[in-house]
Amino acid sequence: MSTERTVSVLNDLLNITNDRIQGFSKVEDKVWDQYPHLRADYDTMVSQSQTMKNELTGLITERGGVPDQSGSAAGALHRAWIDVKNSFAGDTANATLGNVVYGENAAIDAYQEALDSGDLCPQSSQVVLDQLHQLKASHDKFQNLEDLKI
Image 1 (tube, one colour):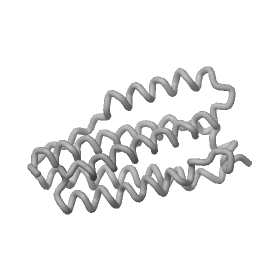
Image 2 (image 1 turned 45 degrees about the vertical axis):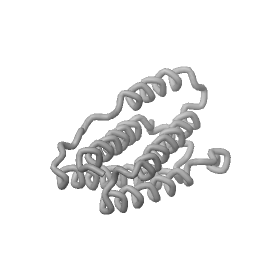
Image 3 (image 1 turned 120 degrees about the vertical axis):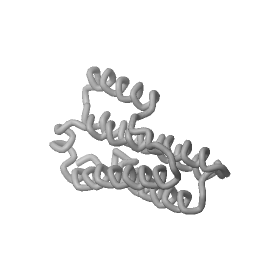
Image 4 (image 1 turned 30 degrees about the horizontal axis):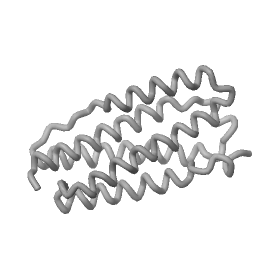
């Protein structure tokens, strides 16, 4: 595995994490009126995302790379779609939480692909694996929206 390839994969994950952070900013306050018991979990996800971003940035820098602080084009397109979809949705709280689950699924897939690629050094693989476990745990809290209804 080359250092260049490791940095590239880590930057891809950094873009996903930046998309995640930007997506979280789209969650509207009215969600918390309908689902107040999820607020603490959501705040934890936001905090974890910032920590993940810092960890990935550190790994990239340690390997001589330049962290890409943007998000992905797919993430930007998804957020625009969410805006359009929410403008027509009757239950924006439920739709918004559905979008959180969708985004978490995309992040989990990207992290798993990074691990499966064989392009990560052992230290990077461990950090990415730890972050994947965090993503799966947060996903599980939001996955079954029917169970979350008050």
